[in-house]
Figure: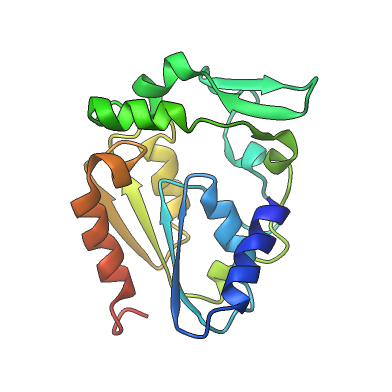
Length: 185
């Protein structure tokens, strides 16, 4: 997670214009860490993601000691993946066949260490934030999202599953545009 946040920070260092950072799912951890102290980041948007406090990890925010049935940890190689056969039902039940096929082609593994890393700083303490609850998400349950959302300055709820950028792009675009409006920043 720290490496991902460092990559985002590097991109932010190259940007002079105002930025709205959007973190989807695990990306909430990344933007929380990456945006801290960056003057040009004017708003954070969390989409069906964790919204961590200092000291919290993906593992601790999961609410369970056991990973979801769709998770595929491989301690022997230090990676975590998602079981392809369970992906459509857990993450993409509201997506069309083309989106599901494209998503399955892009499944990758990530280091297990990201689930144990805490944010080095917590940007939502210093930046305005919006949380987008995806009310039909079967992976990050809406009840958990609403708990995370209590930390955000504003909450928007969409009738979408875990990947609204694929299933409901027009609704997500409206929510992001609303968050990015100059009066909202």
